[in-house]
Image 1 (tube, helix red, strand yellow):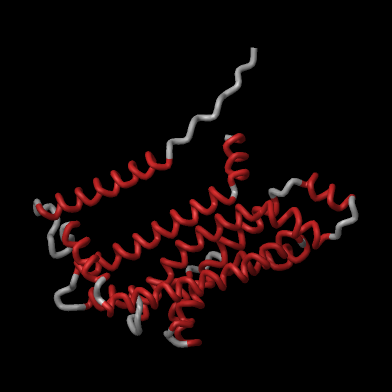
Image 2: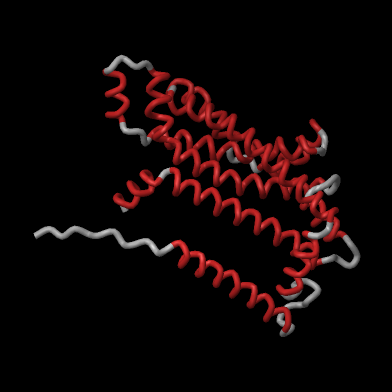
Length: 270
């Protein structure tokens, strides 16, 4: 007698959020305890309450808001340009094996190069303004979207493609009607991963450049002050982390709502 394993019910969204909030509060309480009891020097690890209080105060500061808007602009432009380049390129490489084979060595050579290592080179070539950050964000964000697009194309049902070809549809029509819709959930996942990478590169580039505007520049000058303004540094890091969490949660929600069929199929396989 065969037994069928029933899928485990997913916890409610509210329950997941409660657990995540509880984990964040527990981590903040740990920092508060470590700092208040003297286990860590308050000069290097201020209490969590002071960090959050300073973060709220910074939000009311027009100068800090200008820094934040500059960083968000570089992040958004670089991420969108990367998506506009990576998706068509991924569709091309994933659909035409000859081009994929011809360019694979170049792609595999460029992909492992750390984007941070290119900061001085890009600064010398195009300067250290907004275009500097956007260029590096595009380079770093390109790879997650590109590889997820190619991976999504490999998972397309071959029967669906053959059925369309049998009705006389050409390669482009098959790509647009079958392959692209099937790969879209993977492209969206690549975009979500690239969003986090883009945020890291934006702030890192600003810290290394140490000039102009941006949250990274704010953190840099707080770090070189005498004495170092550790509360300002951690408050800036707090807003960067909070923005990253918010963007990731938003994109995950969009993925689940737009591609319920995809997540349902993954649940059946697991």
